[in-house]
Image 1 (cartoon, rainbow, N blue to C red):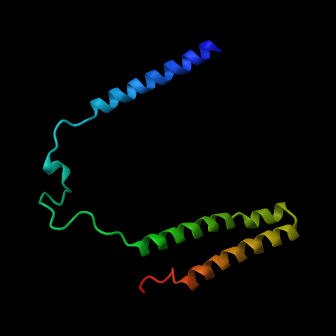
Image 2 (image 1 turned 135 degrees about the horizontal axis):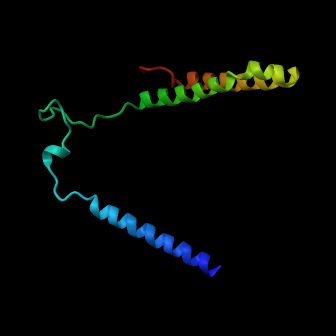
Image 3 (image 1 turned 120 degrees about the vertical axis):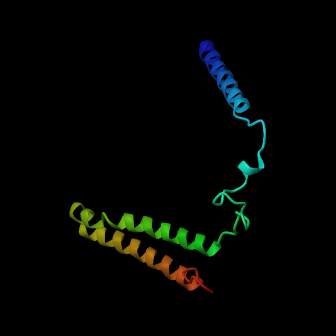
Length: 117
């Protein structure tokens, strides 16, 4: 038990030492304004490189990802039909589709699917 404790302590000390050395060696000694500025065809940038992000676009992307995952879950449904009881398959499939349709209705009702308001 003492040997195991000693090995754990030595591993933590070694890991901390290696991370400290890596952190010290990776620091840059000087900051160059040209290297830290955004690159725009070799010229100084005209506008700010940090443009505001459209929250509407982000919301549409998240909704797309959610429904895309549900489509991936729907694809094996015909294969499961041959492997399971028809009654259980119908109940599960229709329940899943109902939940998807309720989610789509909710998003549509909230106005989340409209690009311009």
